[in-house]
Image (cartoon, rainbow, N blue to C red; front, side, top):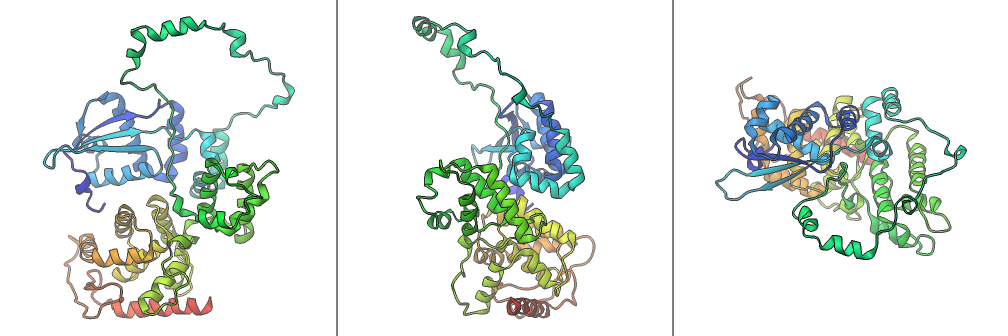
Length: 461
């Protein structure tokens, strides 16, 4: 993990608390539903912190302790922590009193979503289905389901509060509040509450300005798009790749005369739209293209090779880019999985991922090295890179750092021999193209091959 030591070192202290009460059912949800999404190491970190919650009981410990408990290094702990934060299972707070003193981290565990919420979540349920397959997904769904009872056959006889409890006279309420012991019991303390995990999906994944601009206020007033509806639109658009103009049609199709938007109906409409567009194939992040709001070359005619490449990477999906680089052959499942994982876990936009693919292919003899890709991806995620242009500029600025990472990969296995390329390749990367993996690898030739393949794609499209 890039420069983890700048944010966390072994002598830094930590303590653990929980946002809500963790229960036995949470362990099952974490193991069976979240583990396929975050991996076994991230789950191990969560469970270890859960154990520390009771063992430490509010006390502090150094990260040496966590390393000993998990039998792994600090970079691994740091990278797995980011996964827990990204999916909403952990909130991290830090207190740094002085530059020379150890930091104090507060790890606040958040209970996972209850099964009903998990399976209703558009993104998590779909990604779980893709990770484990249809058969296991159905088995998991049935495991967490409860028998459905036809309530129409029953008559409700539940008593109300006022039927059971007598009213308290106003003077007793006033007297109770004025007692000294009352307020002091709550001072400086919070009630135990249940606050399930929730991941954050930025508003910028969907162009709401364009969405609202094309909607008639008479047909869909702004008040109809509540916070819950807006969140559902955002998730569905991100998951299924639905553009704003198409989303307008879907919303118009599910709004009722009372201006109420049925979220379940919107989900069904989104799935039907995707099935019509993609023939029923499950949505994959690698099929996305750069959102319009983050395209810097939209409606601009490229004047240089750099701008031409930028426009290309803004309008092609990562999967299509991998396919074109392979000369039209379908990318391997391992490459697709790697790219999709970093898009989901690091929340990088498609155009940024395209720059990452293009860069790594040129640096590593046309191979996607998993650790190398993940290192750069996590760096770009922390830098909040959103556009193709920003990714290109950062690749240029951090060229030496990224080269050191490539060298570290081979350290101890072979002698690193640097071959200095005199030509700058490509134009947007003003750097020395050293190739430690293969001295016979010709970067310029690789660049020309990439350009030819992408040019062929442009011409065909």
